[in-house]
Image 1 (spheres, rainbow, N blue to C red):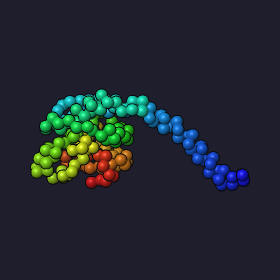
Image 2: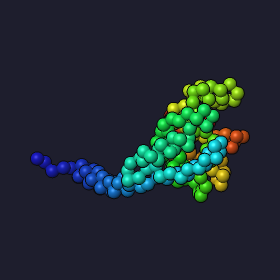
Image 3: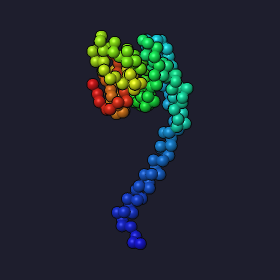
Image 4: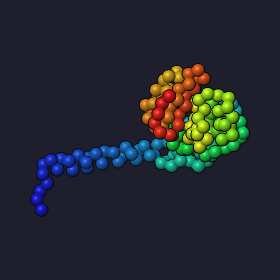
Length: 178
């Protein structure tokens, strides 16, 4: 068997070094806990929840989030996409805030979405709110434009900017901005 070429040797060395260097970092990220704080503007409810611990989503915490982000008009509860919580958590990590997220809208039932479409502009017929994959929110101590930039920097879904209504929309759909 011929010895590896110099180029091949250095390529293998680099790949091995990269594998070793990223393994502990990945393990550390998986082990980190993730906490979010919410204040629902329409119900007055507040929630501080550690929804991810030791590499796992926490079922009881996710249930609490599902309840808080329910359709406040109908009371319908729907499963909220844990990836949406990760997007919100990543946005939180990019801004300097000590406040809970003010929730304007989480899950919306098809009935509520249809009613809103009849009375408001900008409500999508197939809104990701109806599948638990979208949230409208703000942080009282962070300028809305800064929150929008943080959402765009995360790069994990849609980011809508509604300065007249004072909220940012985040979702886990395809990457897009409006």
